Length: 327
Ligand SMILES: [Zn+2]
Ligand SMILES: [Zn+2]
Image (cartoon, rainbow, N blue to C red; front, side):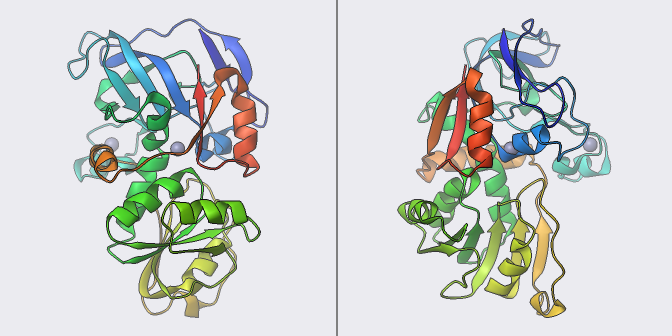
C-alpha cells in the first residue's frame, strides 16, 4: 500500500510502499477514505513531541471502511464506515481508567504516534476506539470531526457554562467549536493573528459576534477563553481578557513557553488549565451532537502524496478549516 512515512523527526515525510497491515483479534482493517491533518501531526514531524514510533505513519483523524475484522471484533462488520481518533488504546485498570479519565491513562497509546495512523491506503485500529459516523457527513467532511471536533468539544466542555467564549487561534478546532458554542446559545469572540483579516472574516461567517487580533481586548470581558494556537504568550493575554472566576483552557498538546506574568492576572479565581487527549465518552457525545447542531466542516482536500504540502500549509497558517488527505 502507499503510505507517507516519518522516518526521523524534522525531516519531510517520504512516500513508501508498505505491506497491508493484518488486524489483530480486537482490530479492524480499514480502507482509508480520508484522514485529516492535525497540528499534533506537525508537532510530531517537527520533533516537538518526543519518542514517536519510528518509522511512523502519522494521522489520527481517520475515516475508513472496514474490509476485514479480527477474531474478537463484535462492534463492526465488513462494509461499516468508522472514524478513528487520537486515543488508540488504554489499559482499563489504572486509577485514571477506573475513574472515567482514560484520556490520562498511564499506558495510553495514540493513533499516528505510537500506533501507525491514516496517512496510508489502509490502517488497523482497535474496534473499542472506533466510532460510527453520521451519514450526513461525507468522508472528507467527517475527518476533522475526529480530533479538531473532539478535542475542541472537550476544551469547550472544560471551560464551563459561560456565555461569552473567547477562542484564540481560529483553525480547524475553532471553526467546529464555534458552531457548537453558538448552538448552545453562547457568544463567540474570535482572536486571530493580528493582521489575519481573512481568518477574522471566516470566524464571523461561522457566527462569531466579534473577531479581532490576539493583542486586542474584546468589547466585553470573557467568561472563558479557549486557546488552540500553540503560542504560550496567549495565556496571559487570554487571562487579561477573562472576567473574575473565568477559565483559560489550553486545547493543544504543545505550546511555546508561557511568559512570566503578574499574579494579578490570575487573581480573583481565574483558572488556567490544559486539555489532554479525549475519552471515548467525549467522542460518543460530540459525534452525536455535531449533526444535531448542524456543524459543517471547512476542508481543503489534498492527495495522500501531497502530505508534506498539507503540513506546510498548516504550519504557515495558509488554511481555512482543515487539510484532509485523500488516498
Ligand atoms: Zn489506564
Ligand atoms: Zn489531533
